[in-house]
Image (cartoon, rainbow, N blue to C red; front, side, top):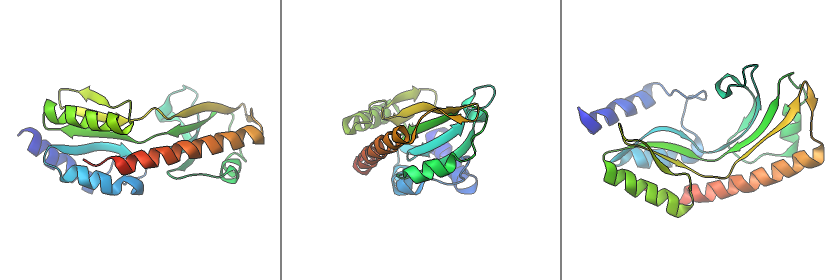
Length: 185
């Protein structure tokens, strides 16, 4: 059994049934994921290239129960945000930018440490070993935006502030993209 069998099973599942809501690997990191999965000592278990999202919080406040109003894996415009906010739900609406996140299974502690060191050297400051049972490394960065913008069916911010959020998010998105280009395993 071991790592090689786990990798074979995991990669077969990715091909046959991607568990993400989208159903596929994000285009901006498809080549990176393919490169990682081609290495003897690594395979991806989950990934997201980074995204901008507007979430309507559930009554319970749990993220996995939130309704996605808008999502983009590329830069956005103020018009896109305003269009998405035309019909506001009664629940809180959150504006979020989430950077790249990769979960990578590693053959051993040495390969995991090598991957963490690489991630951190590029600027993925939140990279670290998440599990030693299966030796999983998470590669992630600190560039985030997470703020409430609507509640009880009313927008809490004006167009000027939304424009600032869009501008700053697009800057973070560009920085995230540049880091991804440097991530060669």
